[in-house]
Length: 392
Image (tube, rainbow, N blue to C red; front, side):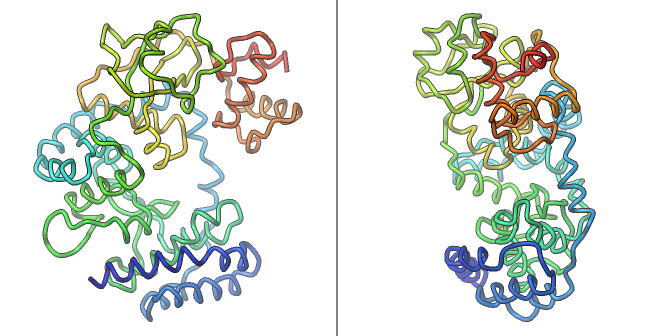
């Protein structure tokens, strides 16, 4: 009851705290900024233990370095997914679904989320709890909240973590990932506090050491993000050469009847779902792997905004559900890191907002590439190739 009351108080504080956060801003003198965070925490009901933890919090340069150096997402889909979907994760994923079958069944009964979806995140995030991170979580969150790149994301997490510390749910020196995620599923403090579930019946919520707690909490989080029970998330497909490519994209969704009319089929004769709407995901262009993604895929994007990570997580879930490895097909070569930066500079010069020159093929860069491909009479599939660069 105490935890529920604290979560309600925190939610109320966060709902009315936008103006406070905007007034306090980011950057600047760290001591003054931390005093404002302390005032917000006190307003949310954080007591002496949580406030004492904040007093010793400091900026961690390692966190800023990690935030600026996410070169892993410069890999192509085939590179990243081949590394992340391996025999260890497939074998241990199946074993863990069997070992915790009763908990997974309860999670699906309550929240409608299949075991393989939860297990895929469990595998990718921490290898089933084995690698949970060694960053001081409070320092990580304070660092990212004080930094001006994404303060609106991390500032609420500081008060949530202080609440968890104050309630003795977590120790003040709790360790986790560089971006402040905690436990076997790498849950942020707001989700820990508001979505946490006691899966093993011991009267406490321990997402670091209890797999049942982590499984039920993750199912609750996924459902809260909009998961639709009984509906697919992604299927691999075959696509014809004459699709209306300019209309393709993960957010441009069409009925199954329209995909069938266009000649899209399931891989190896697998039938498309009889109903529903889906968009087309082409991580490496129209000659590479192709997937239809459904509204449930949006939940993956809520978890992580990286197109490559989310397709990998969704495909790993499909593999755990019995699907074969995807067909790599024959995509055209992509761009390396420096060439991608050059492309982004060229796109910016043409008036496109690509979200900065970071060498990562993100959603904004893909959208700009599609526009320029269409202008040049190329297939507008959002996949930049070396042949595109000289024409920009």
